[in-house]
Structure formats: structure tokens, C-alpha cells
Length: 266
Ligand SMILES: C[S@@+](CC[C@H](N)C(=O)[O-])C[C@H]1O[C@@H](n2cnc3c(N)ncnc32)[C@H](O)[C@@H]1O
Image (cartoon, rainbow, N blue to C red):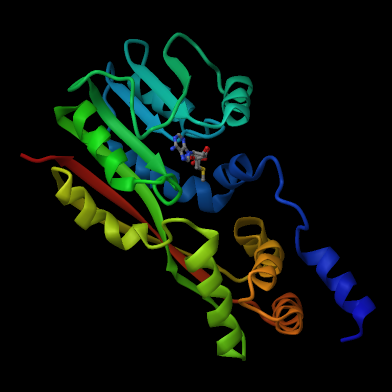
């Protein structure tokens, strides 16, 4: 494909910059609504309960948690990102029942045995020490508390391309570099048991993408490919070949996120 055509295809299919509303847009998409509704069901929130959303981001889940806890309940959203919390403040109906806190979830300013439900959604994949966060969740949960942890495993990412080596190199960049704890999905049941939880359920949520633009909105295909080139995982030529094929040929990709439901044990 001539350079001009390549640029044109790129520009129309792939987002160049990470959009500010990335998290909110994903939460509002069919994909986000689907798996978040399953996580909510697994939480089994009862009226009057205290729910802590660790790494709440722009607060996509806080409204549904507050609705489930009702007027006598309490929802605490914690995140280290001030901008995300500002967004949560403006977009969520913050009443007395939703409290936003800026902080590092490795050290929770919440007393022992006081939380009924704890939730993460694509957060443990980012933190420096997932087991430290799990220990904190275990500490704050009441004896009959429930933790629901929705975390992907990026080794499940499959993207169809005739040159398997290019596809593998792209995924290696994602799992080696782009995501800090890229295998957290498969590791979580073991890590959680080690931190004093019993695993009640593990639900796989596999998202299949057959539309390249829809996949790009979640996966950032061009941005990640460009970073893979910079990091030496792909040559520029291979990345251009990869992106052109993804943009112009029938598209298929899939990735799995696991929703782990855990209780305190013993
Ligand atoms: C992928 S976002 C998910 C946000 C939200 N859970 C959602 O579903 O939209 C991950 C969030 O975890 C937060 N985060 C990562 N490490 C953190 C830490 N150590 N302490 C607090 N928040 C953290 C980030 O700031 C980010 O908002």
C-alpha cells in the first residue's frame, strides 16, 4: 500500500491519542456494561452495606453500588489519580453515601473488619504489589464479606494476522512491557488463597471483537504498535504491515477478563 493510503487508512480507523474519556467510554459500551453487570451480581450488595471500590477511576461503578446499598449504605471510592476523582465527582451523583478518597490502595485508611464488599476492576493489573492490596482487602473485610476482582490476563489476547510472528511480537510487548501485571487474571485465585481468601467463583468474560475500530477503542492498536516499535518488539515495516492488514481485512480479536469472587478464609 502506498504511504499516503496507509496514512489515510490509519487516520480513519485508529485513534492516535489516548482519549481522556477512555475509562468512562468503555464502562458505557456494551462490553463494559455486560461484564460490570456480572461483577455487580457477584458482589450481591445488600441494603445498608459498606462497599469499597479500590481504583475507582472516574467512578463508573459508584452509582450502581450506591443504588444497591440504598439510603442506609455507604460507598467509598479510592484512587491515586486526582483527575479521575474530579471526573468521578462531576459525573457521579455524589451524595452523602458516596465518598471519594485520593490514596494508594496498598495502604487503606479503613479499619479492620468494617467492609462488606470490596471491588477492583482492571486495577490489580497496574499496582506495584498485588498481594499487598489483597492483604489490605482481607484486612478491611468483615468475616462474611465478599471481594469481587475483575482483572484481565493479557496472554489471552489473540489477534488474527497471517504472519503469526508479528502477532506474537505484538502480544509479547503487551505482556512484557505495556501492562505491569499482565498475567494477574490467571494468578489471582492462587494469590488470593495465599492472602487468606477462599475462591467462590471464577467467571471468564471473553470479549470477541470483529470490528477493528471497536477493538481499537479498547486495545489502542496503533498506539500500542508504535510503542512496540520504539521498544524494539516490532520493526516499523512490520508494524505498518500489521496495522494495514488489521484495518483493511476481516478482523478478529479476543481477550479474556476473569471475575474472581472471594470470601475471607478462615
Ligand atoms: C483501568 S483503571 C480502572 C478504573 C475503574 N475501576 C473502572 O472500571 O473504570 C485503573 C485505576 O486504578 C488506579 N490505580 C492504579 N494503581 C493504584 C494505586 N496504587 N492506588 C490507587 N489507585 C490506583 C488508576 O489510577 C486507575 O484509575
